[in-house]
Image (cartoon, rainbow over all chains, first blue to last red; front, side, top):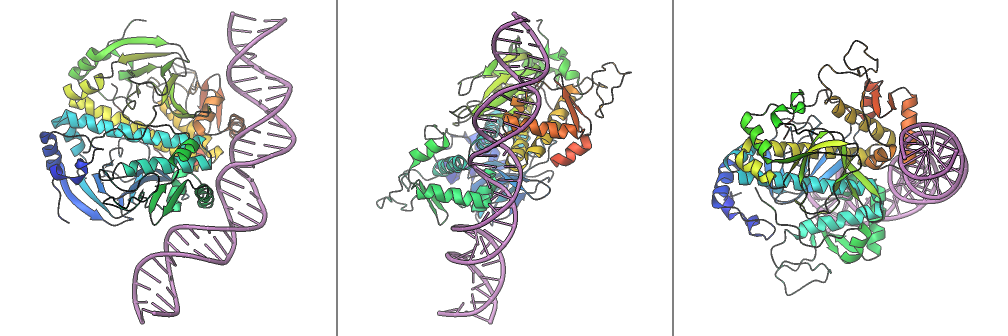
Length: 260
Length: 260
DNA sequence: CGGGGAATTGAGAGGGATCAAAAAGGGTGG
DNA sequence: CCACCCTTTTTGATCCCTCTCAATTCCCCG
């Protein structure tokens, strides 16, 4: 329950995140209202809610979604540690999306005006916020390509690869779970793979498929030995084959990103 | 062919755009490299291209897209006058998208570093860039909901309504084409509806449907008298029915937006 | 008048959706 | 430690929305 100082934030130690100047950190620290730990299922933002706060996810997973009036739900994307939540709200006439925690999570809470303060006081940080938003849009772009043009099997493969990469980038340096799935007993963390706290229903809602078909597709690919998904952890047994199935080329390491 | 001064930009006269301070306009003006007029089909940005320039669309339509290696194409969204183009590029490890002109168009061209200059020199403008990017993301979010969860008929209705609204917001005040489709002869501009320079193939690629099925769906809805699409112009004959089909509630007028 | 890109149409195939149950798990109160 | 309840995972059968493939017909232009 103790609060973490921004300059001591464990996330910043990861190579995934870029360094920030002391003054930048001080400003963020001053804008931070509080730090909370909430249980899985908590709704951070309700669909259509106005004047929502801003969050930075420190630990855990969440997802953004939208629903049609008859209940059909589409998950827009998943949020992992380091993601800034709530910037898109209210900047639009279109109905806003909801955000719900997938796991227990720890978050920093900011007032909405912090957004403007960030830009005004420290243009560098303002620019980084723009970067984050643009980056998130590019994730949604990728997702849109999948749902619009990929077959069920390709969609599943794409989602597994992309989510795996994101989750893997958050592992402490030298971390566990070789991508080959071979348990590395000599390592500090022997758990293979990455956390994967989804439900098949979530995956289905994200992929625009029915639960039944998502399940059957998952099984088919798994039986070819391409991956293993158990106990909320995902291991890619054959990353190459999955990437080929998904028509994905990307190198490996994601670009370093800002952390507000 | 003559260049337009930012403070005399005809777009700014529209109620759709917010007012900018003189100093803001002066900065934008100084960052503007040139103004160009290019023909339909011109590729502003190639998929995967690095270090792309920045554009503001002054007139005409364009679209962003991504393709799979076997040629399947997904249109991510359409760009209309006032849209800022190219911000998302390079902010991502994921492959970038392409941007192509749908019609002859006129654009302002900026260097990519203008983005940073905007933030540094004028935080207000930086904040507005963030606003624009966040807004564009919310359009993609809506699109994703459509493709992931709406039926073909619902998707078509959604696209027609949303694009109509965007195009309508760009009509000169008191403009033409009553939404009812009744030609208003007393008005200055008697052309009904809004420009709609798409091809059925473009619509299909945007909706994640095949060309054949897009066409059949379009026909079915048209024969119910819900809209008319001829000579590159779209008229919504029964906006209420279309909105109901699309499960859209939105008020009417889009929120005022920045114009960089 | 010839040519090429759009728009139309129709027949047939198939990937996913639906619907319905049954089997697993996981907590929890007794 | 066990019975019970609720969520998630599995499976099977059947249906139908969309895709594919293949022509034609339009329409704009040189």
